[in-house]
Amino acid sequence: MTQRLDIVFLGLSLSSSWGNGHATTFRGLLKGLHELGHRVTFLERDVPWYANHRDLRDPDFCTLRYYETTNDLRRTYAGCLQQADVVVVGSFVPEGRAVIDIVASLCTGQFCFYDIDTPVTLAKLAADDCDYLCRRQIPYFDVYFSFTGGPTLARLAADFGARCAEPLYCSVDPERHRRTADPIRWDLGYLGTYSSDRQATLDALLLEPARRMPDRRFVVAGSQFPSETVWPSNVDRIEHLPPADHASFYSRQRYTLNVTRSSMIAAGWSPSVRLFEAAACGTAIISDRWTGLDSFFPTATINTAGQAEDVIDILSSQSDRVRLALAKRARATILAAHTSAARAREFVSLLARPRSARPALDLNIESAA
Image 1 (cartoon, rainbow, N blue to C red):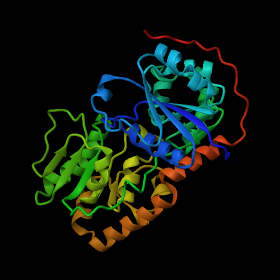
Image 2: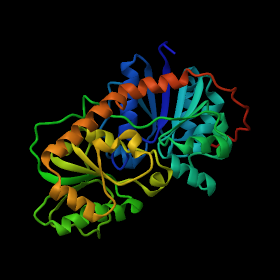
Image 3: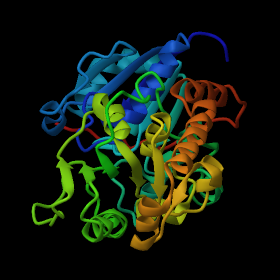
Image 4: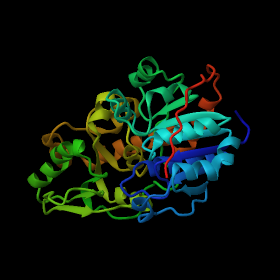
């Protein structure tokens, strides 16, 4: 597929990265598509919690528009959705099931879903507790793009009726994520919004080492941590770190910590964008362990840890020569295969593959006042 495409995305938020990891993923992919010459529009539900924390109001790589309700989406953007070559709805879009039905009734081009939360989505679907996607809608997508690869792709087809399930992992923009001249400030850092199922691992792999290594410096950046959280005195806190500051943040660490949500660990093959960002910045990584990690980061590019002692041993015993060699190999690995440009080419290539005809669905279009 070499022609210039008109692509419309409907996602959680492009304008705000506040408590929203989706923004980084969408920004990278859309920038890559723009650089390939495609026309990209992003439609975002205008909600106050993102409106009050916007850090990308006027992107230069796409057209960003807002809608107030699902009725507003239908009234205002029907023509845009009808004329698009490709329409992609993302996971966790507010009133996503209604949005999908509206788009399905209008879309004449390819219709896709981009699941940035696949294990969470499948668990919600199994429990009939997913408000942004329902089972009957899955076969309608020409491609179900998944943040998770491996066996989950086969499960999407066998158990949920996906006609074409393909991995579309996160990516990194090497122009934004590169080593800066900032001096090292922290021995180990972590970047991530609070999640209850990550907290025990964060405690074991960062807070406990901090308590036991009072002469070392640590940092945790991310919003929504409970106010009652007790931080060791040698752990700096950054409430919110906008994407523009990520490169400087990683460059000031000797090591950065990756902590994976439990559902992603269970599924495997679910790399975080933070892994790719840190690697592109030339920062050595300590990651928790999960199946498929070595398919993105071979052993010679990364450290892994399962308990506090592992982290303490790395921080106290690994030489700078070894640390920097790991970081250099990790950076080369990511820049070779996981840049935003590479992911955009992959996205377009997957769209070009032949697939079975789209079935007719009994659409149940909901409306919102």
